[in-house]
Length: 46
Image (cartoon, rainbow, N blue to C red; front, side, top):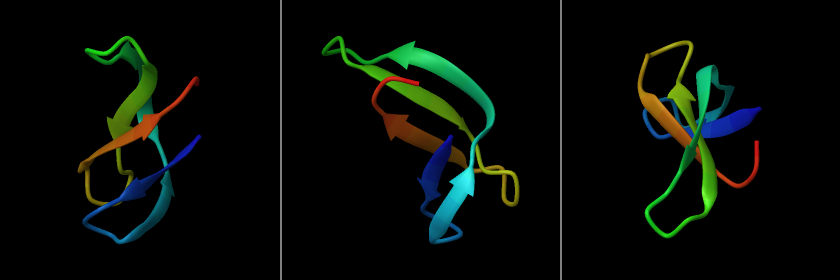
């Protein structure tokens, strides 16, 4: 799964992806950028 990294300014493959549920109940995936280790986030079912 890919997400947009704000630091690298491009789409990257998510490292250590975790399925989470946001406060409003929507599903999302959270992980890290493999290049810069910044948190990346993707809303939607994983």
